Image 1 (tube, one colour):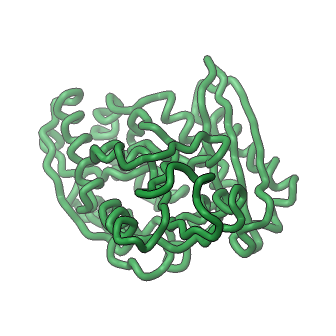
Image 2 (image 1 turned 135 degrees about the vertical axis):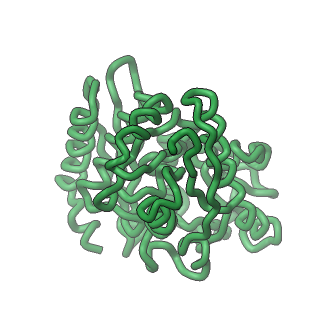
Length: 308
């Protein structure tokens, strides 16, 4: 059965690219001839409200998990930043692929950078994490909700609904749209979301054979960095309703973790920031690093931000 596994995927152009990418890797590295099962999720259907108000990013994965549970699919491909920090019972991440560029992109047809935007410019984003970091740099901006797949967001920008929008560099790059990027934010300017730029493969937890075969796709440095980042969010009860950023990078065998927390009820409130580092060789050490960073945010008054 596992010589021709079924991949559950959303049907957006980016999601299908990601699934096809995994399909090609399965053939090249695992000798598996997979096929795709395209699905529309609740997250794709609800476009008139912010994700934080309708159930969070988990809305992008629930239908795919249902297909895994009832046997219609054997694995699901996700953008890791869309995967809830705690998976439902019976599911597991089998692999995290090598990370693409994790940065955020400033996209505008008229302005070359965030600094160049005029006073009161309209900037589109659906991410509370981006909202608080944008306002930390430019409190004069009007941040407006932006939902839809990547092509829809770019169309709305081109129609003049926004002066600029912020998207993930990785998604634009994967679809050959890197030319639309006019500024790549460095982490010091705009800290990425936990797992941003990485693809994850989810399976049924009891499918031991498939998990073993998929281990050939796992990129250990990304796997450990992602566990550290996700541990920050898990320790703070993180979801898309919490303006939280976490990004880990390697310096030799040392993992350097940066985190930032904003206040959803008062987005212009100063950001809380934390840094932690350790020699990390396994998942428990990576997660301990994330817990340390989360504790630092709490010590700075993070609970008051989270209460909002």
